[in-house]
Image 1 (spheres, rainbow, N blue to C red):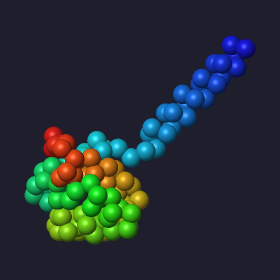
Image 2: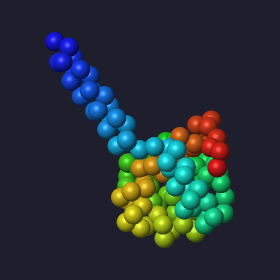
Image 3: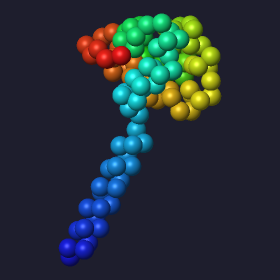
Length: 111
């Protein structure tokens, strides 16, 4: 009986770790902004995220226009926001970042 419990516990723990790493992360989005966009845009991540409210960022993501809205917020980063790498790899993390630190969130990032 204890072997079954150990296997079940290990399976639950494993699935929990996989689900956590597969989800998007606002901290990762903040690091992406700092590394790839801060110098290009010329302002901090707090200013970038505060360009819109949480609802506006969410609507842009739902409509598939996140890159377009981010380009409007930072025209100098247009090449980055239109790249395939942004769409496949970075968009979910950057979305979590801007959503968590939007103008109406009350949160202020440290970048």
